[in-house]
Amino acid sequence: MMSPQPPHERVKFWHAHELGKLELLHATYITHTFARHTHDGFAIGIIEQGAEGFYYRGAEYIAPAGSVVVINPGEVHTGQAVTEAGWTYRMLYPVVPLVQKAMVEVTGRPTDIPNFPEPVIQDEYLSRLIRQLHLILEDPTTPALERESHFVSTLVQLINRHATRSPDLRPAGREHQAVRRVREYLEAHYAENVLLDQLAVIANLSPFHLLRAFRAETGLPPHAYLTQVRVERAKALLAQGWPAAQVAFETGFADQSHLTRRFKGIVGVAPGQYLLYRKNVQDKLA
Image (cartoon, rainbow, N blue to C red; front, side, top):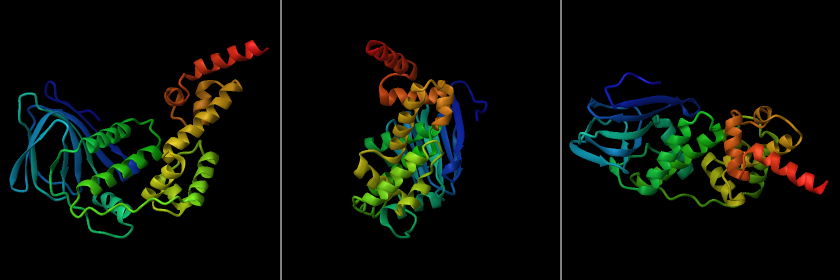
């Protein structure tokens, strides 16, 4: 959803409905100033360019490019540019239950709402994770399983690295039977919009523990394994002469361009080039 802006200011605001109607913002502000306000949930984001200044908990802060910003629920804060160039940032606004759920994933038990004592965090690794998550949630063709997996993993990393009294992650055991059941489900239901909570029920593990156990067992997170299964099925259908648009639909991709991107990412060539290569090999063998 785009709204009228002053010159050079840009705002994109949208929701990720499968994540509790998570609100997201990607904006460049130059002259805009946020009045004192609060959020019912958390405000989590990264500064991409420039720097944002803001009042928070009785002090003034400056968040430069590359920094992570975390505002706890109910805390009064502002927001304004500190230079004429303004600032560009990516923000997520998860409701409290979503963040609490991530804490439960870490501890394995009900817990209080996490508190982040520092509103400006210098953590290059976490900044990259949040930016990657934001880009994934901005792309409507990204499967729900991939979106959920990155969201849970990123929140857990934020909590474990920067929340007060950060809990230690429980070790991920090699859950052979649980992972086998999930793999079999993905291989049988590859064309469906698989959700992380579904897989967690099948595995009888918490979603985050499943993510870690699955990667430990297979070397891939579930969403990447699902993409690999879809691409293998697509290869088989293309070899049978199915048109690429129909193959995309039959194998769970959003559209033909989505199939092409993921196919090339795994196979190394686009579907059309793959078929041409197969034909050349078959002609030589004939």
